[in-house]
Image (tube, rainbow, N blue to C red):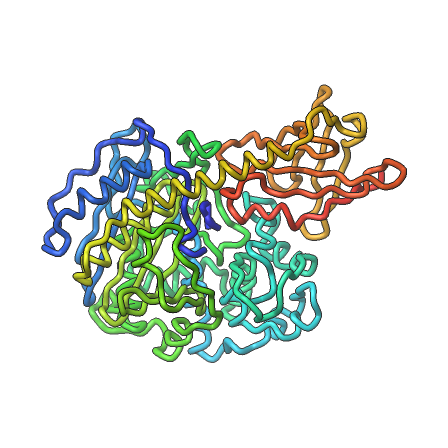
Length: 538
């Protein structure tokens, strides 16, 4: 999910609009200068990033050769309150959870309880995709590598925003989610199959996914403050509040939501301090030191090689502005729960995460034993990219690049493109083109094969739409032109207003309704375009 989410996805695509707001410019955490001379000026740089991209809080940790080189927090945990972000402040790591799911399956593979080449139906006999061949041939590795034939973010509305479906109900509804590409034919980022992977972990281990993570990963690594998801946050936890730009303009708190039904895709809350332990284990090839000072192995070197090898190639695109060309990779692909590319002659193993009000990036440079984790409390990927690349350049002693200026230009360009797109909609709109039917005739229950029901109600002469499984998705319909309406969601931080177009049959009855996001800045997890809404006969 870029949120830019979802949140979510490829880091260079995670760019949200930039606006200056004085209220977010809270004082930074007081901290001693960086001890490593390579990081001289790094504190001031992070502060500049916070100010430029209007990010209330940022936490950063850098590891090298098995030790923490740097860990620090900047800005307030919550705007208007005195508590400051520090190295132990918890943030949603979102899709950085995917690597934990891959690790869980690797542990079980090492124990002989499964193979990544096993068919999914060998472990979950009820599993179905919308194509019988894909159902039969889908392997566990396919769940982790975004090559299923699903389109970008397909099925995300089954759990995002938070729905009342269970994990298994979400997975069972995959049989009705359309495939828009070829099986193993191309890369298309998804979340829903990591929920299926979570169920495979549970079937093979005999434990809940939460129990497995806690007992087999968190506890061995000493990640004592890490939480399974937001439902497990405890009173008194040192946790950040996330912020979103409502209507892409005004900073406001985002609600603390959970992915309780697709936790394997992105549920974990952690701190840069705890994540530094995860990075050090990864950079040590799966080896860690337990609480008794003994070396232990979480997963085999063979399994790490599998997770860190490209399964699905990804085309390399040109950066949106020339200033970002130094970060353009020579190769790009996805392994098992990890993004893989190169930077300044070094292989990178990395991932990003997007969540309501929080986005993050974790980056490993295996050959240099360097790792960087950046957690932020605002939905602008430009911030974590600028901080990450500045940290990498410092640790690799690379030439200095103005990442802050480059990403500022990229954000401005993206916003400009979105504004231009809206002007095209306005220019194409027919004036004085009212709906064909009386408003009351658009009211009713509409059913999509994979999502379920949405209800359009006539309330006091105005139409209101409600997604029956998603409490957050309540919106007011405004006439746009002819039989097309605009949905304005009452939760403005969603930034997901959509067109809703009704198609009529020859007798003037509603045959179906289709939706699509209005803004290109809307997170891809709002996969409205995949809905096929048909009136339910009463």
